[in-house]
Image (tube, rainbow, N blue to C red; front, side, top):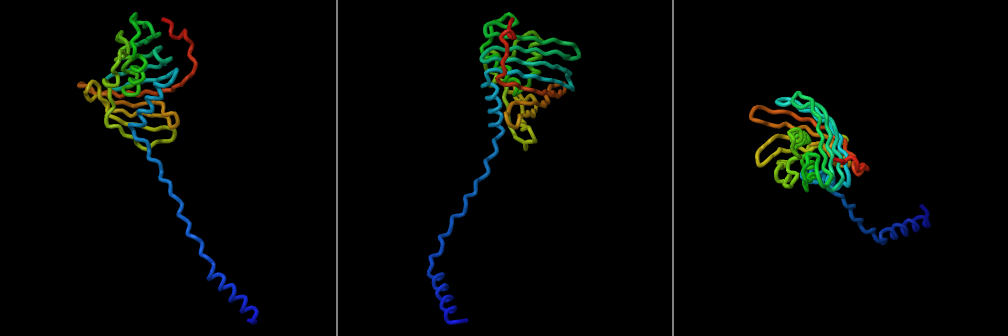
Amino acid sequence: MTRLARGLLCSLCLACAQAPKPAPQPAPEVQAAPEPASATTLFSEAEDALLAAKSLTIEAVIESTGLFEAKLEGFVDIVAPDKIRIAFDGTFGGEPVRVRYVADGVRTSLGEDAPPEVVAAVLIGMTRMGLLHNLAVLIDGKGPDHAGGGVREWVVPKELRAPPPRPGARPIEFALEVAGQPAGDVQLWLGDESLLPTGRVQTVRFEEGSMTVHERYLIHVDAPIASDRFAL
């Protein structure tokens, strides 16, 4: 190596030795994965979404097997805060039935004053115990259960669990308690995006045996509903 080359090499090594070392860069922050929503949160959000809608149309297919058999198909129209129309046809206990109920905010098709909490009674009743219960009440000639108030205290979901979601749906499982008494087990299905109910499977226990109820829903939110739908 020539003297010139050795000089250049020494100068380069000296410059590298004297150059300040780059400051260590902080490790990038690792973003923690968001905690999955609890079953209680999902359930509350589903009910809140239904109750917050200005209008709803719920198309439903209902079938029960076991101790009691029924098969009904129809819809519920709702315009907040107090207009509701329920129309279902099918069989109930082996007999053909035609279910019709209207509350226009002032009166009902049963000839009574419109109850103040009829919309909540039907929607909360659907999420917690299914539509079939209130259809049975209407078939018996009465209005929706607890339409005067208190439905949340009367029918209560207990021990809510959120199994892993499936494509397009989130299940919630809970034990059903009615008037303080165990009444069955429920699996409620919510849409993956909207969290609106899409269906449910419910086992209802009686002293004589049990029945299984399947309900499927297609819910249209804030779709226009003609006012004459609520004519008495």
